[in-house]
Image (cartoon, rainbow, N blue to C red; front, side, top):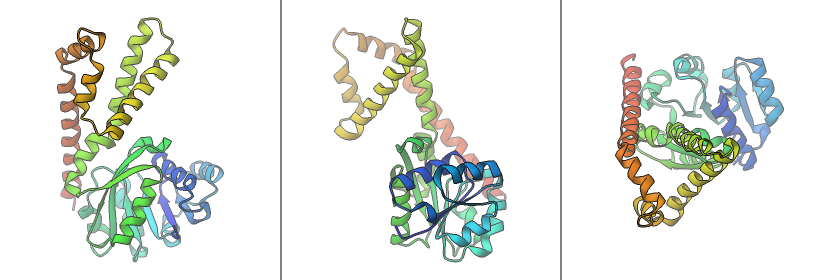
Length: 273
């Protein structure tokens, strides 16, 4: 891609994105810039990726065609206000929950190019899942360019912004639920004599393999579950126990609560305008 990309903020998600972009050879390191307040953060990014670094976020904007705002939501407005006069026709990419396209437009102008995204932490191992929502100023080529960036560290889908809350529940936040699931399975195995390292290896590989079966076979998850459950066997006994303990209900409730929180954050952000 013959584009220059900049990151305002260089935390874990920004570094995951940078790593994916460089490993895929999508953009050369010399065409990537990042800013942060911490000299240590910038030095680490420079050493690891050999990219351009600076403490000046405006310098990042001036150097770049696509700018990823990778700071905490509580300082988004300050950062955007600081760079709004140098954005021009560049593409602004956001990755924060609760920050709507409308709220971003209210700060930098509704004539600016904005793509709201929601990646997740498996981007760190090139298995991220990201949603992309565009405003009216984004061309097909703009969207293609930004999508190729997110595809470099996993997969991405273009969705309507009204689905972003469901995306957060199903993908943005869900790695935390899966980590808890793996930890709980491993705890049980450890209680039955398996070493913790071995327990994490067995349970993690099972989760990854099961997910891959859903994605690659296109068989309904319920049917795949039935394929594992032999009559009168061990698996159906475990499934029966999960149903009795409200496993599905607790997952649905957790994601519902996550989605409700995302909506409240968006509403609170809009109410400040």
